[in-house]
Image (tube, rainbow, N blue to C red):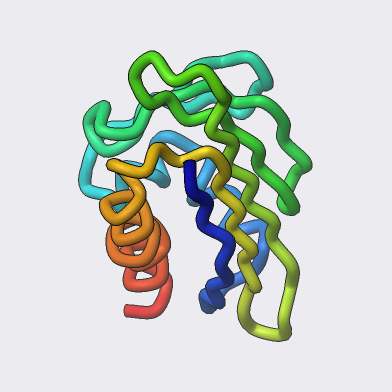
Length: 126
């Protein structure tokens, strides 16, 4: 099992970034794919046409999102925690993703950088 713990900085307020990560219509705008998302603990979500699926665990409005991501029959929960902090005209994002199966690690790390936060950064800064 591996983990990703990294930081991003995106132009925009924490309120804007939070909405882009929790509102299914906003998610569809920056990913180009339909999304199933409800800002409610215990609800299931699906992003990138089902390539990412899991359960929402906790929300702190405009500040934090905690999710469990599904990886097959994995015994340990793979937890994603996204923390948003204002930084003048940007938002600092701390990502901590635990218990990533070894065989999925490279793809997940690449996906965070290039598709997830890479796509979000491109959307906000174009």
